Image (cartoon, rainbow, N blue to C red):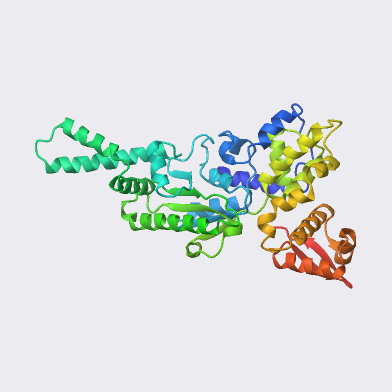
Length: 416
């Protein structure tokens, strides 16, 4: 955990405006193909095993989660974050221990992507699940104990007969009894660990029932493990469940969890991740890279997507470095609205025009800083009453804050 705390401390420095003002000397200019390759890995699962050590800049919430895990005795921690903010990456970081290389996970920790029954047990038995190898150790041990118990009940049982029955048990993978044994082995595997990290998928706004079903299944897994705490090797294991912020509501299981929110990254932190990877800003100008980071609004997956879009736009001309003009040609307001759809649809469910205006407003504040309400209305071409209603909705959902300044109001972005 100490390595995580150290990395988060570095990320705090990266959010300081003066941090990184002295540019590192580039070893060589990062070529477009290298940047393409880096930015194409939108999910942490597809990246090289050592990327956490090389260029990961963790959200501040990872620090809080690491500290809580060090002091927790059992219990559940919900790691909440917006879609694409880096929940899987945060779980991967939490699975590492001090002094252990990124390629070597903590042997007392399990980290996996949630999968529903019965396909869960089928994939474990077929060897297609990430935890299949570990599971089979417990599964074979369980079957061996069953065979041993039966052999004790039958005197004169030969070793050949015991092996034959074990093979028979393994061949019966499709029947209900075998599924029950698989479930027992699955739960037994958890009891031998100290920390269980579960990554749920990113759900669309139409997948609330699917998410509710997944949470219910995870709840019954946790409940089963709790009831078997007397058999746990290291005491009751701690559970950490990554949950999409946009969907974190209306489920009984949430009340049983301690909550930690992964706050979106600051633009400086995103640029720092790029610098760590390539040791230079090129072929971007610093303003262009910061513009991409601001457009991403703290979501690292968007940052990577926007880098790819900008490189494609730049390669059509390839004259000089990538500046903010090229960035704005590549990443349109319409694209920003599309990427913020899940967030903004809660504010403006049937008003696509207001979602577009909201993005234009947020990006204007991101680029120019706090501004007077009347000036914002003029610059964005909105009537005063329309701007007031738009800001009221954004303020209610903590996107912006307004404070009185003379006869006008000063509008600022809410910094998480």
